[in-house]
Length: 275
Ligand code: AMP
Ligand code: MN
Ligand code: MN
Ligand code: MN
Image (cartoon, rainbow, N blue to C red; front, top):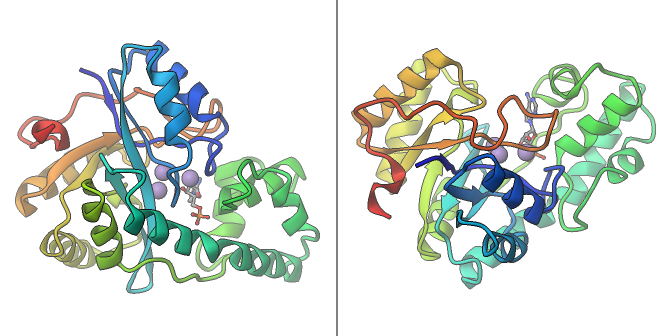
């Protein structure tokens, strides 16, 4: 069975509509797909309709933005009830901060000599409910300020760079509470992407597990082959299940296409073992 449990649509910062994501995944041989838009559940209905026309199973997902210490973490919720009010309201509340954050990002870019970034990023927004740094990155690319999306993040949008502004998202206990309250499993997304020392990573994994976290992503487009093995070991050592997801955002923009993942390393307990 081919699982892809992390991807995005135009309901957050992906390039394809939910139905297009579903059809692309099915045509690429994915058996089980989770659509996991940032802080959002709105695309799941359209995705479910489209999945009816395929043999693929759709898992209701979301990717919750969390502030832990001074780090931003992403917690994927899998198998959530998209109509559960605690989750719906929690996500609505964290989305609400994104507009003022986008203003602050645009102000910071203006101070760095880049004008019109707010309106510019808005041109790439595909859901009135959500603006993300990816929309700023697409604006910076198309204006010729940077070569590609990666370059936009590296030069402007990550911590320490001129267009970065800090933001307070959900707390880890809140995110876990919303996901579990909606009947889902909580997965620490792309752990290899966080700027943590080995000690910091161990503290995060222990805290995540002790707070009730279920799984970590072992296979992710953010991970190197060496990190596949490293996070498989972490999953075993911390008694966490293992998940896998391409984190696909769109053709030509993502390192891995839908379903383009190697087999799960041996010895881990996959997140779907309880499905
Ligand atoms: P936001 O939730 O607005 O902070 O945006 C986060 C999104 O930006 C992530 O989900 C990715 O899609 C994208 N992103 C973050 N860091 C990078 C990076 N280094 N390269 C490419 N995309 C990135
Ligand atoms: Mn994204
Ligand atoms: Mn993420
Ligand atoms: Mn993602």
